[in-house]
Image 1 (spheres, rainbow, N blue to C red):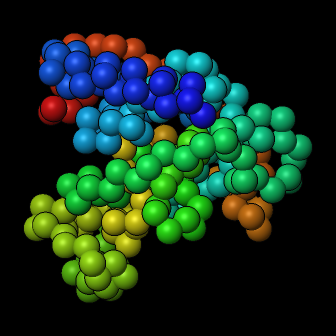
Image 2 (image 1 turned 180 degrees about the vertical axis):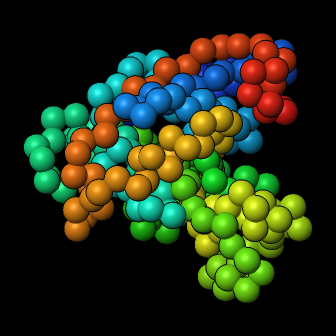
Length: 230
């Protein structure tokens, strides 16, 4: 545990320097349907540092998107999925630690949001390795109000409401899970994964493996290539 705390502390220092620099990390998530790219938020430094550490260690390479629900999300990162037999129930694997919740109102569950899975612990601490990518759906005024009512403690801005009514997402998750990144291109890859056939445990009938890499890149280049504004 002390080693983990030390690693995270060093990475947090690095992240603080990155936030002030002209560079950041571009995440590439590769599936059999293609690549999607993502950025990680500086507002969630512990999640960002932990995810980068796991990616650098190639922890995610060969793991599965083991849980998919169309119009909701796709989930992966269970280390047990690397050697799982067909039909084996997944979702309980971990790395032996949790990451403290970093839930912040401005980071919300719009389509493509990268968020941390968790169990029902009262502090809403995140799994040290499992994550999900929001698929979601587009809501109208009535259905969005119904979704918002499921999180009465959450205040939605007009901008967030408009995004939920145009791009889509899963608004009822806001305030309950840490959103720590965002897919910034090729959202259709999420569509492709989310719509595959699945069993009663929402595991895809055909294994969907992932590979995740990261590359430090100038922020201006990320903006030029993907249109993401820091």
